[in-house]
Image 1 (cartoon, rainbow, N blue to C red):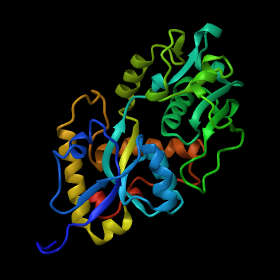
Image 2 (image 1 turned 180 degrees about the horizontal axis):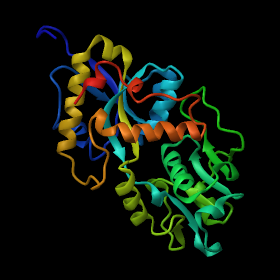
Image 3 (image 1 turned 180 degrees about the vertical axis):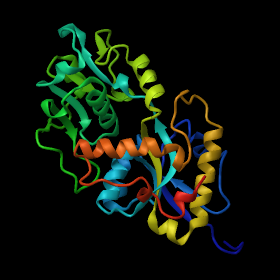
Image 4 (image 1 turned 90 degrees about the vertical axis):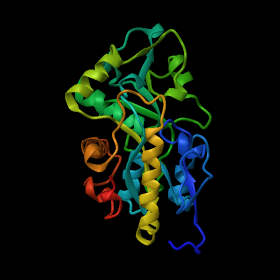
Length: 297
């Protein structure tokens, strides 16, 4: 871009996280592009607007939402840059005041999750199925929201709760046997127990064995931006890398940077999304990227 050209401004949906804080507070900037951080907090409230209304040029997107977007032909490509990720075993919880519950015990019972296509739900269900033998089709899944991609329909057997219902409160009241909850929704109640015994130790053992860090959000850009201005996409990636290097408070186990470093993480997300009927057909890891973003890092 020549010096007499105006620096373009991109509409970006990116919340303040440890990885992105230095971008959001201005410590990491670009000479090639101006980023207008105009998305909502939390960022997942902007995912529908990104995919249904084309409201943002770039930003963070839940990996399951991105897989659905790619499967249904939405014009976004992935950067090999995780924004959020964590071990997820502790996110399945129940109220022990109604009795002890083991993972297999949720078969035949109602279990709540904000959206069936929520990324946390994907990872926890996959662990319950593959590590603890839970037959997911025997669980009655109840949800609050539809998916972010308009074409997606929940699998048969899912039930939608009335608007305004609290999954966490329904679990505390005993109306739901268990719930799959992210940190913001996790109730602070002494009777809440993890469905997976000693969940943090179990998660670390799983990671040591499988070598997978569940990804929650990654960075995406509109395919037109990547096609017309690959130099801007490369510079955004540079910004993310530099911001990540300045991050404080990252978990010791966090998704790495780069395509090959995340190949196994992404492959498992694809495999489990197919198994759980969240995407209509199998994708390859490589088709999530284009020639520009696949070469980053």
